[in-house]
Length: 174
Picture: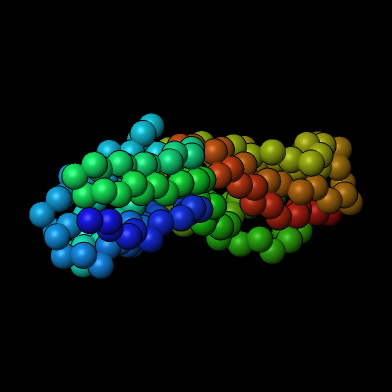
């Protein structure tokens, strides 16, 4: 007996799921639960769902092809999974331009919305430190940049699950 499966190539972000990535219209396959429980390299893991299909969950960055041959059931099936990092959903509490006097030390915007499982770091850079920079969460005058504008950027590093991101705003010193 031959069993037909629908398969393909799937482009996923870490944490994404593909329902019915391997499906069969044949009820006989209900009793064979363990054909797709292993995927090389740990890039995805595959489990059987309640509708006789299989669900792939993206676990880490990489590419893997899952292929299973079964002589008893007379089928061969494969699918390729390309997994990439998720985009960083973080934002600044405000990206509006800031105008300050040299003696002011306003609070820098806060990086908000970082996912709870983000393990990267946040660092601040300035396009011109003579104008302004972020020190201990405050915007500080750089010393000689009167009347100039600098771009301050929160740099979120890449981690295992999320892409790096840059969040910026402008500061002008009177």
